[in-house]
Image 1 (cartoon, rainbow over the protein chains, first blue to last red):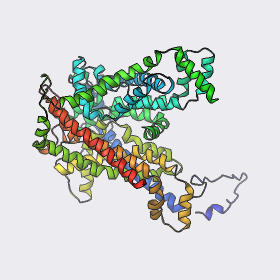
Image 2 (cartoon, rainbow over the protein chains, first blue to last red):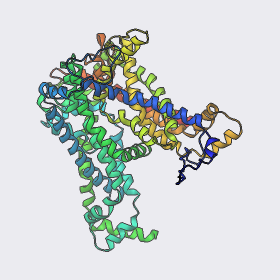
Image 3 (tube, rainbow over the protein chains, first blue to last red):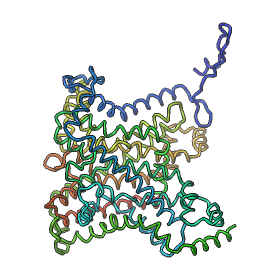
Image 4 (cartoon, chains in turn cyan, yellow):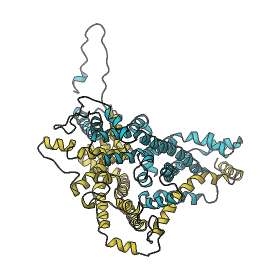
Length: 304
Length: 300
């Protein structure tokens, strides 16, 4: 390959097209040998099949009609007669759209409370000077270290004492301002140069104006990361809603799916359709915002 | 410049002495009521015989003494520990290899990175149910195994295969997450180190162990700490694949599953479940300290 590339293309016809061949290079601009290119793409495709294949298989199962054998051997990947019938049947079996709406409410509320609460507290920890600031910071650090799985029974009894068991508010509250998000916002505010706020202060801006007009716009990126992870965390959560919700009418989508699986385990098409409904919005969200996702994981790992 | 910063800060403080607490109040309240208070009350409840509808009384160490003779507790402890021992080495090593694979900026690499991250984004319930279907006796994996002449394998009916299947699912779901963490670390490895090693005649394997691994060692420790704490607290994968009762004769129950099963419901033994929770705390803190200490020792 490396030799053929150097041979100039024979000029044929009137318009010779000097088509620049794209060379595959590494980050230092060095050419990669052909065997390495083949090996890399081969491995990438193999891993791709392993990571995405199960989702596609689930999608395929959900599209297979009632008369199609979903247990055929050898397995058939493409439905012979694709149908959306199973999606209608899920809705007849469990109120899947109500569950999705419940999940959406909790996830949207979680985004708002986390963004507002974490931004406010993060600003207080990073920017304002007062007695007890270190103690406040320590409270959030300690809270971050407490494993949620270990306090879940006490959270449940606390919620019962507040009379909020079996409500969506009860699902939302324990994570509505997470300590990790507060510390992420604190670090973001610490990185904003002080001079900008000083100038605003000299111009007579009070603390709320400085916060809203100067500091917040400067940390938009981190705020986006907090929002995305707050949405995903609430939408995907399983253990806490499982404990706090008992009335099937109030279920979120994850709990509803578990219920569907337990009750109708015999019909894989139904369960498959339910999981597709649960995962599709997230995959779309992720596809649109993947840059922020990756930044968020990096930041979380370094600073968390 | 420095001095002017300081004077302004002082003036900023004088302006509104109460507002800082207003800023921090919502966050502090949530964390105090729903994290710190439950933490303290878990410790407190572990010394009582509190039940869901009964306040209970102080019973000293009775719960902990009972744990010692509770077969289910030992099964849970065994399974959670086994989970750490199998999952953590896999999650320290495999995502590093994956990160090396997606490190080079070759065409289409962003697509592959995103695709490998998809299982992280998907909810654990979706992931669990997908794999229940894949590993079912009539599912895809068994169909393939049968086609190549291996025959059916009872991934979800055998006590041990079930646990190992759940571990495999945990690894599968975690690969993308730790891959991104490693990717950030690999970006900081100086290119010259690899080149110098290559000039000295070191092959790919040799360079992996003498250049890459030492350079990302602190990230490996971080991944080890994060994944061991998460693995010990495993709940959803096993709950979904084995069922609420924890598989055949409850042999696949993990500690957090036991906490959930014991402490909830109208007859839930809150005190006893809290004692198990305390064990979960102690072990997770110990795991963190162990991993971090191993890190410091190698530095010295």
